[in-house]
Image 1 (cartoon, one colour):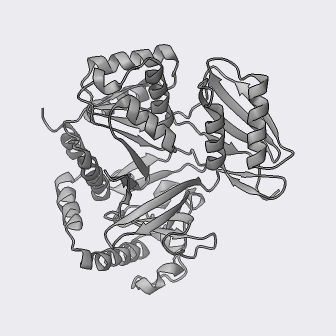
Image 2: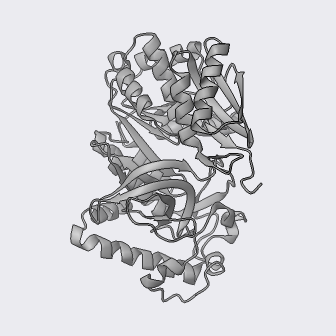
Image 3: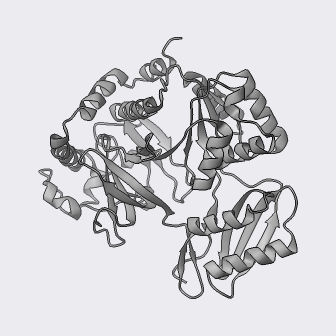
Length: 443
């Protein structure tokens, strides 16, 4: 089998061999030199954008291109709202719309925008992916992927996705229908195809695992070529990971990334979420944009060290987490709490993390094994809607028990509405937004 992924990247003008060679030199940088190496790259990328990017120059107070690292914390912390202007106005002078890689953020956290990477930067991103997937014996030119993602509905866009899947050596399992009938077809596909790994949205793969459990099937027994499952974009809870590894019969790896950046952290075989400090510089800041010590929670802020086309410098991506430093080369994402906009704002003034709220809900509602999946929406400070898919409606007794548990966790005086659905609404890509608040936190 020829190297189809390598070939498709090269035909699109991405200097993959050059990027792989450079990435390998980063990986080989000695421990005692790595911090100085990274610091130099931080200086270089800031200096480049201060000299070549008018958009970034207008955001920075001190516009001297002779940037000093001691001025790092004086640089602005950028958010998605800073990028709400035409992409052409945000590109560096050496680049234009025709000579960069362009994509669009999902918008699942609000404020979607188009972004660009220069071709060397995008090739470095792929080098990072090759490297990390290689931890699990996957050669992306040869490994066949079962992809749990959505499909565009428009014919032309759907055709483009099919072509892209072919060039990337993957088979897409459309996740907008996760009924037992659809999941049975998924299982049949695994019987007939020699997949090497699964990649996709956590909630959809968990749904298949629940179906497998009900049917007493371990996926690897019917697809013996399967090596690993890599979940992304949605929270992976400990009990779901246990279920997945039991029913899939392979290790489950948690990937954390952002399309506009790169893989940010990727679990190794010791279940450590290793930060991608080859291509990125990751900080944790408090709400006043001050650095917090390792081991303390704060906002995740990321700098792309090699993207010359578009400045992602001290970019607050909207997630909250904790970093732990094992060494200069080994930084671990110890905890990913959730998104900054995923909080329930309650009448008392209490601020409850949405993902923790989701975890409590999940535990209670799955005790009877009836629930398939659900989403939670806070519509007012004291009102929550819980949409759920289940084999049978929740009983009145079960709802009362559930409301009591939630009240104990949150506070008295809250109203919960339960709405049973045939299926839940997903984004165009198939992502399931599991918790959202419609409440203005300033009210």
